[in-house]
Length: 190
Image 1: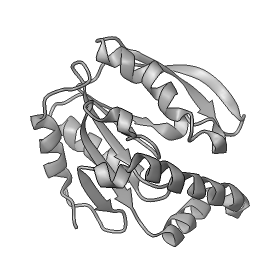
Image 2 (image 1 turned 120 degrees about the horizontal axis):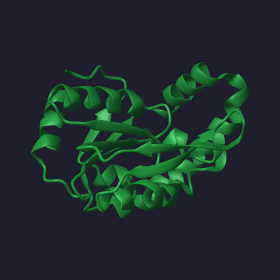
Image 3 (image 1 turned 135 degrees about the vertical axis):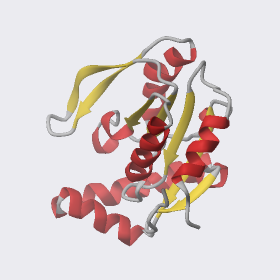
Image 4 (image 1 turned 120 degrees about the vertical axis):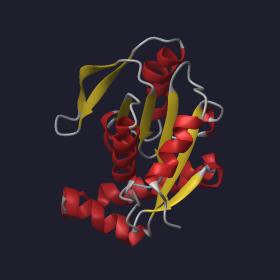
C-alpha cells in the first residue's frame, strides 16, 4: 500500500489531542525499516501546515544495544507524563560512542510530538496516540541497510537487536494495533 504523507498529516490535524494538548504520533517498526524517513516527512508536512512539531528519535534514549527493554519507562517519565500535564519534557541523550548518557535535552510542549523508533508504540500508548504507524521491510533488507549505515563490525549487535525486536513486537502486538502499515521499500507520496 502506498501511503500519502499529506493524508497522514491531515488525520493527525483532525484528531483531538490525547496527551494533554499534544497530538502524539508513534512511528514504530523494526530497525532499518524506514521509520526515521517517515517521521521526517510527516513532521515537515505538519510543520508546513502551521503545526509545531517535534520529532524524538528513540535511538537517543536507548541505553545502547541493550536499551530496547527499558526505553518506554524513560520516555514516559521524562517526556510523555510532563507533556500530558502541560509541562515541557526533559530527557537525557545516550551517546553511543561514549556508551553512556550525556546531556539533558529540553522538549517544549509542541502541537504534535512524533516519537519514532523500535518500541515507540507499546500497549501503554493506547488512548494517548492519535496515530500509530508501523513501518516494515524484510529482515535481509533491514540488516543490509543497518550494516551499510553502521559498518559490518556491528553485525552481531544488529542480529541480537533484531531478535529482541521480534519478542517485543509479538508481546505488544504492535503491527496488529497500528493505524497504518507502511512498506518501507516504497517511495512515500507527498
